[in-house]
Image (cartoon, rainbow, N blue to C red):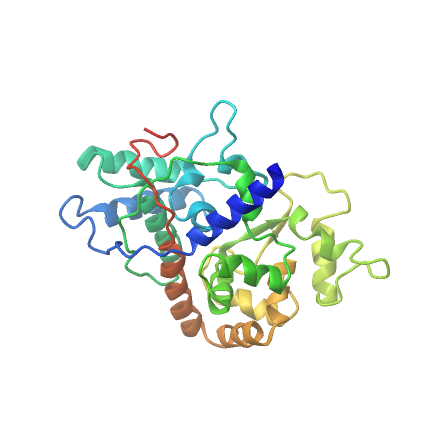
Length: 318
């Protein structure tokens, strides 16, 4: 009975996640904190100058935030007492650069205290991460409120790197996102890095009869094997998700078409006619990819689940 109740609660939360905020506005802080965009951009730029992995971290952080309870900044909260927060859930252990959001929040509190939500800061920082990496810019709708609930167990709902196309489609559709959104947002992997544990299934003991996933380019598979040996114990071992990991471009799609994708969930995009056609389209045109990415990012970033407050610190509730 308890497990059945738990399943019902998760399903109810999933339904609510498909609600897209209608009260967000690009001019939300026009009168209350007009310099919010430039202050957040400055914090992201400063951090990126010292650490080139910051953009990919911020983009992934925003995605992982929006896919749990909507874009409410719950990913930023620290575990407290017996409650283990989202950031300490297994899929989020490798997340970093939380300090960038905290630094931006401190700067904003100094000039417009109690006005800008941490969830808005994270949405802006994700946009700036893309722009600073050579990608497109866009106007971010603002006005999100920060959530008060953050549970590590709910990170099970994040799409896994081993998902097939049916699982990916279900995960995205539960959040009101289409197959086109799936393919466009997957392009965020252009800034990504995968640890060995995320793709061991493709390069070692793929099946009883095959050691390597046959969809992988053989020479590329050997390169991955050299980085990730069986039983790898090196914490940070892995591979960039595309050949220009600090630059936002469409190389991810080109590699995918060429059999050089890293994750099973990336390869899965070629197993459905609609997603396969979109992969080819974005591989052929960076302009088309960027246009679709911006549209899908705005759509994803507008998923809400009823945040309740403006935190004074992004890692703790008021």
